[in-house]
Amino acid sequence: DGAFSGVEVLDLSSNAVSSVEDLGVHLLPALKALRLSRNDVGRIRRMPACPLLRELHLDANRLRSIDDGALVGLAALRVLRLRENSLRTLAALTVLQTLQLLDLASNRVSDIREVENLAALPYLVDLTLTSNPVARKQLYRPTVLRSLDLLRRLDGREATDEEKRMAAEIFNEGPGGAGAFAVAPSPAEIAAMAGRVPVRMASVSFGSLLQGGEEAA
Image (cartoon, rainbow, N blue to C red):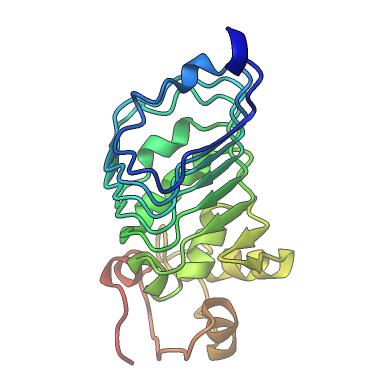
């Protein structure tokens, strides 16, 4: 009530904030954008309910974990910026059913299965994972596009229909079983999809390739 009831944007960047639970933002019913970049938040246990919040910026904190259910009060969130933190797991983000843009650059995500969790976000069209260990794995880009086929941009690059078609062909589930290549991709296709020098492959397993990370030819 009162003087702050109409506040729509709150910028608390560079204020040594260490906890989001005690900010009192639930007292700002009209809040649409909350900027907490360059603070000291290490864990989110429960984000205060902000039913109209559309943008949350937590870049360059010390964030290592987000508890399951911690973000359920952000039912209208469209933009979440989490770059330059230390996150390894992403399951807690799957409650953000209106999310459209997710920036996770420069975190510690290494398991492709964490990225695949994001398939639960029906409106996610823009995802950034640059400078995470997972982004250095062979066939990272086609794997993500295969799992998140609604993406329009991945790591700042447009995800075209042609690129998605190639990803689907590379990981076509044929007689070799789930995740095996039905037809071995050509070196040109690997280069186009992965954006890097191709490795030499014979009969390659989808699972072993992703779990093994980068391998020398």
